[in-house]
Image 1 (tube, rainbow, N blue to C red):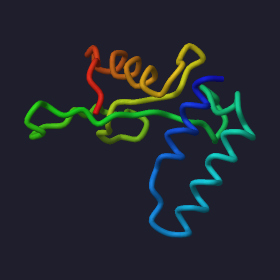
Image 2 (cartoon, rainbow, N blue to C red):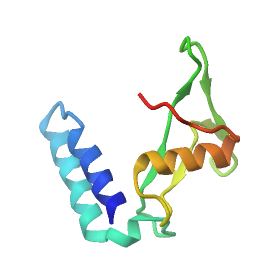
Image 3 (cartoon, rainbow, N blue to C red):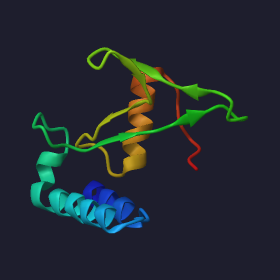
Image 4 (cartoon, helix red, strand yellow):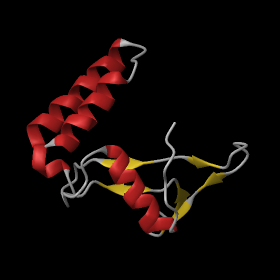
Length: 107
């Protein structure tokens, strides 16, 4: 699945700072390959989500949404669905669902 390849490529690009992070990073990659389909929109305790920090143009404000189950404010995001082909697709869909905003510009 293309979304899983996208996830693994994003994880591989993450720069580790020590051996502990290197081990964790590889463990996550191994988990994605091992669990494949179950990582996507799964009710199991192991699944992948995507989220985004959305700032105004001057970076003086950040958009947060209230999460009822966690009882706190968090960045918009959510579960990867079968229709998503990249993490950016997931983020765009989730931000639109949770806030009504359309996301076009990624940095």
